[in-house]
Image 1: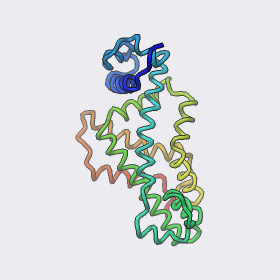
Image 2: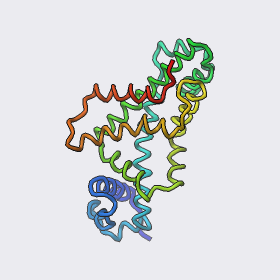
Image 3: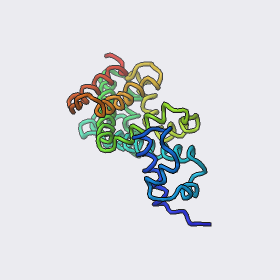
Image 4: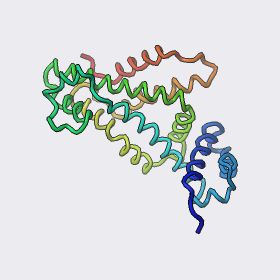
Length: 233
């Protein structure tokens, strides 16, 4: 049995990402992916049983990169001012900043505490927005592949569940935001559409015959997305 090389496996994922994002699923064959990765088609089957398995593995890798960036941005420490204002909400042994934010939202019973929790959730989601926009500028193929896969017949329930498990931190924050009255009582899929799918649309426009969108416009778009999902005061 031949030894499986992790570098070759990663090369196949990168080649699949590039080929699909540039040419689509129909045109992208195993032979084409293998050539782009610098190996023979037969080598591909040492790592993946067929094209479908390779596409799914690539999707999971792309989703992991996107979600990791989002969670890292969301999990950044609270500002010093916010930390002081939230001391009443966080237990002394709070393991991380996410717990602090969740405690703020769960105990936001007065106008003052609700305002502090709202500010922190909006700030955290703003960081996520900017981090994803930055990732999209650096690696546009990630978003092109992700978007194509989500709207293809290759997407199925088990992949959706796996993604939800990886993004549990964000999904829990959305649920807590709804429970505390910070976010509107709307389906989580609508929150995802307004908050994240908007980024996909704005980034894709840069590859079309549309003038590049300025950083200021991206900031304005976040404010519009926040207004769409946040409960009005």
